[in-house]
Image 1 (cartoon, helix red, strand yellow):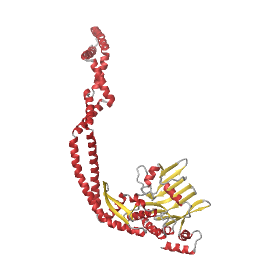
Image 2 (cartoon, helix red, strand yellow):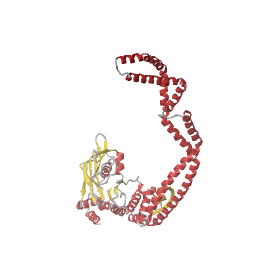
Image 3 (cartoon, rainbow, N blue to C red):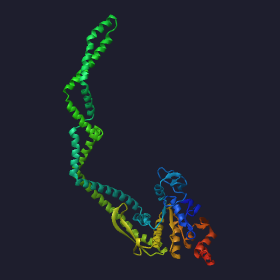
Image 4 (cartoon, rainbow, N blue to C red):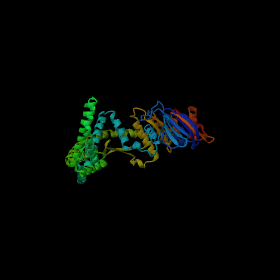
Length: 507
């Protein structure tokens, strides 16, 4: 529920702070006093309305279950305007889109554009909740159906993909074969590029290295002289002999290695390096080129086996389609059996609301996650988009009342603006009584110009203007009588109006 609301500097309002109770909260007051503005500013604190206030702030008891948002015992939604309008949740900056998304899980503004209560999923949920009271197998059946329906969707998509591929299979096979052939023509090996690059480097310095080695061999002509000198000095010559032998081995090994390059085709090495470099440029590395080739080989294998794969999917699809159809028929049969009671109870609410009977039928539609059923509602044979505003509002209340019977917890917050406008006294009282019933499961905010609905409020706020400034105050028993009497007879309150107001409050 919304516990507290604070508003500062919005049109005719300077500063307002209100504390709300559970149940039905009614706003009344003279025309132009600012009731709709107040309701709009409450919605704006949640990003669900538009107002230019310096500050709109609502404190709520809702549990916020969102990543990155710290949940408090009392969560505070805020719209703040300085240079621009910004939104906050528990002092954490948040976009209007995200704050409205969070709030929408707990709060609904019942506008004339909102047909969500008549959406097929919502009506089926109400019907299924009724059935679940006495048939515990329905939920189990629905879970199995949804699981099989999702499998059906997946297989259908796989089959469509195969059929699309089949239409262009020749082109796809040619492309994949061409991609494989390009790599196979080079037939790269891991590490080959590095080896060839080293050969290229050695070829480039072969002549200089061999010349240097030939010159270096001159050192051995003086080897014996050094040995004689060391002997005369009575020094151990082994260290020198070892060094010279190691030098001789290194020079001979290098000469053999570079002599072996005589058999290397330089042009062939350069061409091979160029081909491998092209693969590296295209795929990032030789390893990636080989991986790409393996991937395309798998695709080619898939295309070659596509007929077998298609037959397998078609067979599986046929089996699961039969299961889904049978389960949807079973669910539909259970729903059809409950439909009369659903219509009877809905008609009872409509009777209370002084509306005619509703026609409820289930027709077959395309299979969806909810089954093959579509619930169609008509009021006195007239489609919903053709009934009057008053009828639409009251029919929606009847559906909400039916839904509320199966709510195990608080349904959240409902906001209504003059739902009883242009209704007779009896019709207005019927709306008031249904709203009072709904208020056991919802916190409801409503603006009313009718005494009947105003009298049913569990909390009553009076919106008025004083010296051009809009103000709000909570009314209690005697003041409520005066306000209801004002609604009945105008500013010149009559004795009869006051007596009628007292009777309404007593009832």
